[in-house]
Image (cartoon, rainbow, N blue to C red; front, side, top):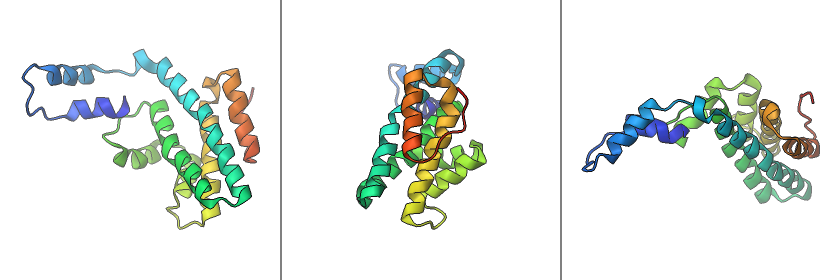
Length: 171
């Protein structure tokens, strides 16, 4: 929704003979997050829980020296977790190209630091970027912790434990 609503709100309708584009544009103008808040929160919780597998794969790949696999798993985390934060903050973005910077502006400082470390924009070494991605996951777990089901909490906290990064949460 973050990109679709934004795109339809700003779209230039060049050819719309049946008026479908105009109807979609009006719907996008009227869109509010409130009716879909619960679904968005469930999606965010499920996304973080599902990414636990990538955390464990990253830790294993680092431990076995599989740098290519580690890089892929790191990239999955640093690419996917900003979408979770954006939906949690009920943000709109025109494309993925402007999502990263926009999320960075609203993210808590520690989250932004971890994301930038995971991306390697500070000139960090390979292992540092992987640690940044693992920190980013832990911070994302903390952000959605109250939304996670019991099973999702167990999975997410287990992944954080495997990564040596226990989340600062209660419950």
